[in-house]
Image 1 (cartoon, helix red, strand yellow):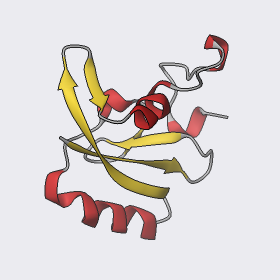
Image 2 (image 1 turned 120 degrees about the vertical axis):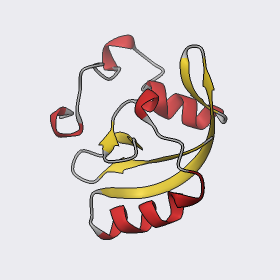
Image 3 (image 1 turned 90 degrees about the vertical axis):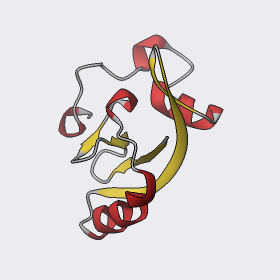
Image 4 (image 1 turned 30 degrees about the vertical axis):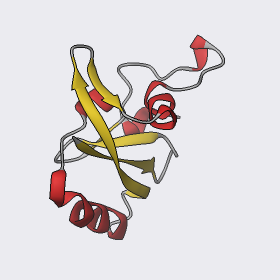
Length: 96
């Protein structure tokens, strides 16, 4: 599957395109296939996201798993301390 990731323009948080809006949770990501380039262009032009790009991922029993380790780290948050991880109930406007 092909999913879109980027960074929230206001907070800098890692975001995932869910088919209609940006989410902070990789498991919300939608398989965008050939539509990804058009979505990226529109969302960056509207200044809702920065640095958006397509990544490969797979649907597993545990949820969506990005194919590359860099994207897995971005999806899960900081690797140094658990207290720095993203609150599971966070939304893009409530990150900071």
